[in-house]
Length: 598
Image (cartoon, rainbow, N blue to C red; front, side, top):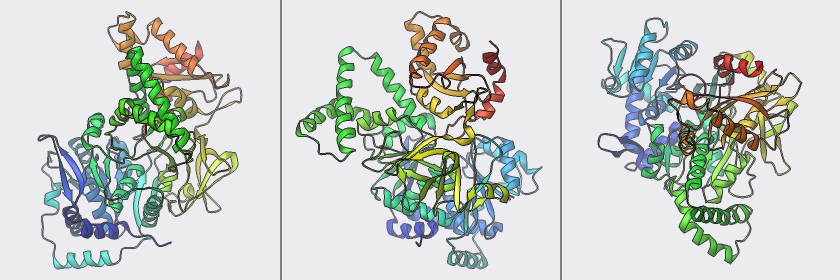
């Protein structure tokens, strides 16, 4: 199958849509959303492309972007690819050491940065790096050092290109090749040294074609972008939006996502399980505080919604007239208000990065929020499988997308083959050879396929724990089951080579404080509160209730409450909010040892 080059696709859309806005960013001073038209965006891409050529960027040369989400991130990305160069994203939350690793491994001479902290980190590396020559600030609020080694974006593109540069630009455009390397994405990973995943334009083109086949979407839709563009999930989704002519709003403050959802009112957006888990816990907590009458009303309405959406529409069964009438009432008084938390216009929300508990998926679908769970990796250009519109299984990751094959190998490992699978790992031929077997990519994840082709994820094979008694434990399964509780914010299961399973648990501090007030528990600090006997007894009871369906050897026997959340900044979780288990175990070794010493 022939796939269209993303740059060609964007150029065609710039002519097609011209004055329609492609991207939006919020002006916090004026409290308004400002749009960038397709014509304007493409002109800025072209200008930046020529600036890169003047700097001397060669074909398939690596250029890095170290910034948070913003329109200029995507503009820089497209400009790099427009001259057949290679984009290397760096997470905005990376430490200076991690940035240094990428710069040296990818031999980065030109680096785009988005804010003052990123600029300061990059500038610190200028002197020691044998590769980094220039830092370009994507925003004009950054205070630059007086140096020829850093400049603002507007200055970088200010010089009028010579005729020679114009000719080179035209030639690069003519020579755009679908087989060119498009990006090297360094996996944040939960373990080990980062590996640069090589994604080519065929991978991107195949992803766009598959999603166009799978999803009912058009240029009338609106998307909200808030996951890191440095991650393949959000970036490939924004590519898809550009491919389809969908307007993209960039949320630059994750803490404001709730209010931004109501402002933008997106029709589509991708997200990760943690967002749904937090909203689910908030809804459950608010429901418990409501009057008995309102609780009964909410329970009735969600029951009707479950019957309507999950037991009829999902299974393509005709909805009885009586249920239709009940649904109209339930939707007006309860269900529509729950959808309003997401802006009220959501058609569907792709969800990936980690498993989302089946009962939680069912809950959101019961009030009409189409959460499309799926499975994918950086190495597969994101999506491998995805929920369809009907006949999906709540505890699955959907079925393989168009053009992609899945089979189960040794040790229940999920193997993938298709045009979305990466070229390999940058400068790591041995690591590349290890993950390919007879043309199949070995994902490192365990799973199974049912007779209808639904994929069920068991766990990461590398993440499986083996107790000293020889029993295998799937930590993600435990974490997913417990994290839905309104009192549990985060959880790290421990147990490899240990006599039993333990956990480090981060409470939902807001809900825990409410519990303390309601039960007359006085405290001066969170450290004091989590050591209170009533609090510990409460969590012990919750753990017992939530683990009833687990085997005795799988259950968490002891836990320790922590006074603060695991964070990206501290290196404890990945940008997609997955626990970095080895780092957590090393950092909290004393607390873990204490649980096994008692």
